[in-house]
Image (cartoon, rainbow, N blue to C red; front, top):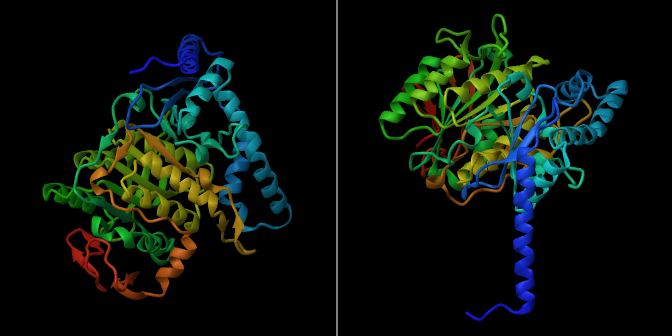
Length: 464
C-alpha cells in the first residue's frame, strides 16, 4: 500500500484529533454533575444493530412546563376538534403555535449544559440517533417528552431522529436487540367492547390493516381473539406456543381505567376485557403481564383510551408494569386518539414491522405518517391536528423480526386505505349483537383468497 499523500495525511490527522475531542467531550459530560433538578444525558454502549442512542435520566424537577400548559396540550389533543369554533378555535391555534416553544423548552431542560448539548449534536451527526428518556416514576415518565424540539432542525426530534422512547432505569442499554421467534409474523388482536353497540366501532383500524396487508399476506397472520376475555387470551397464547407458532405481537384495542387508590408508584392500571357472559372485566396490568410473560410475547400494543388527565398516567402505569414484568417493547397511546389518527399510525407501524423493521423504527414511521397526513374529522370537516405525539414507545429492549421480512407496503393515508377496501367489503353477522366486516377476495393469515371467517377455539382469524 502506498504511503498517504500530504493531503490525505492532513485529513487523517484532523479525523484523529476530532475523535479525541469527541472522547474528551463525552467524558467531561459524563463526569459532570448535573445541576439540581436537571436531567442528565449520556451515550449508550454501541450496538451494531441499533442507531446511536442517548440515555436521558430524568430528574423530578426537570420537566419545564407548568400544569396549565400540560392541560392545554391534553385539551388540544382530546377535545379541540369536538367544537372547533369561536374561542375554542382561537385556543386551538394558540396551542398549535405553542408546540414549538414548548418543545424547545423541553430540549433546553434535557440538554441543559453546553457539554451535554454538544455531545448530543456529535452523536446526531453520526446518523439516526435515538433518545431514551428514563425514570422510575411512571408519573414523570408519562409526561409528553416527545414534544422535544432542537431549534436547529425543522421538525420535533420524534419526527426527525431514529427514535424517541421511554424506559425504566437499567434495561434500556442492558442488552442487545431481541430477535422475535417464529417463521411468520403473528399478531393477536384483542378488540374489547364491553358496552356493545354503544361502544366505539370495531372496524376502522382492522379495515385499514386489510388494505396494507395485501402485499405481505403470505408471511403474516392477523388473528382476532374471540371472545375478548383474559381466559381466552391465556388459552390462545398457550396453544400457539405449544404448536410452535407463537404470537410476536399482542394488540389490545379497548379501554383502560384506574381502580381503587393510586399508590406512590402510579397506581395499578387496568385494561377492560370482557366477561364471557358479557360486561366489563377490569384486568390489572400485573395479571396481564403474567399471561404475556408465560407466552414470551415480545411486543404489546395498547390502543386503550381513557379520556381526561388520567389518560397519560394510566398509559404510563400499565406500560411500566409490563416492562417490569419483562415485556421488551410496549407501544401505547398517551392520550385518547381518534380512530382516523390511530389508523394512520397503525398502518405505517405494522407496514414497517411486516418489512422486518425494529419496533423503534416502526413507531417513528407511524408518527411520521400521522404528521404527513394530519387531517382529522371535526364538525367543520377535516382539520389538521398534531396528534403524532400521542403514540409512545416504552422500551426494555428493541425487537426485530428478520425472519418475517418481506417487501413492505408503503403506508397510504388511512382514508385511502378505507376507501380502497370499502368497495370489496360486505357485512356479515358473526354473533348476536356484533357486526363484523368480511373482506371478499383476500386472506390475512393465508395465501389463498377467501370470503369467509374461520372460527377456531378461542380466536377468530381471517384465514383460508
